[in-house]
Image (cartoon, rainbow, N blue to C red; front, top):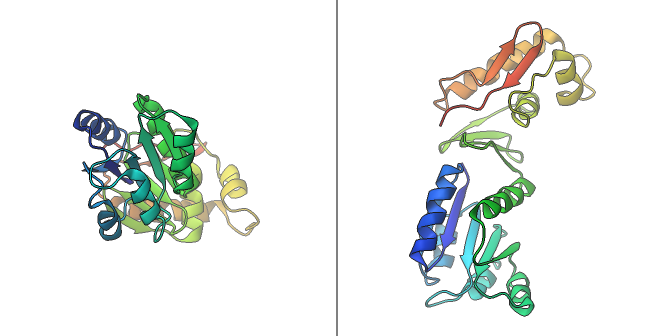
Length: 223
């Protein structure tokens, strides 16, 4: 599941963020000052950073500038400042987004998911299961499996619309493109192989269900 680094000196805010983000399917780490942020990002690269701009020892703007010298990790800056010039400073430092306190934690989660989706990470709510487009991998609770291109295309189609039933003909059209030599039997074989790989992640439930006479659907696994 995606790792979020929270850099926030207000422990009440940080505790609420950790609690809510964990419940929303993210791993979290928390730093209370800017002193070791850059070092931490180099040693333990997160998938996204929530970076407060007003921090002890080193402010968020400087941290952001230094991170941008070696990483394009998504950064959302948070601050109590609301003036336009302050927002522009954060964006010029290299931030991807900017939210002002007090903010809705639910809105923040939606922003995080939108940014991660643009960065090729697809997240299924409440499952902790992540599909990574660039590497053709599926991640669940820090375990990974790699799918073939055909398997990945099929799984991603089902994964993107939980509980929706796709007929075999729809799978042929939407997941396989111009590969018209793929048969219904080949689809069944690919599903069987995907299921076998998924089980190695420690997921006991059958997340790709066969619906008799209709096709296949993805079912969100239990946490």
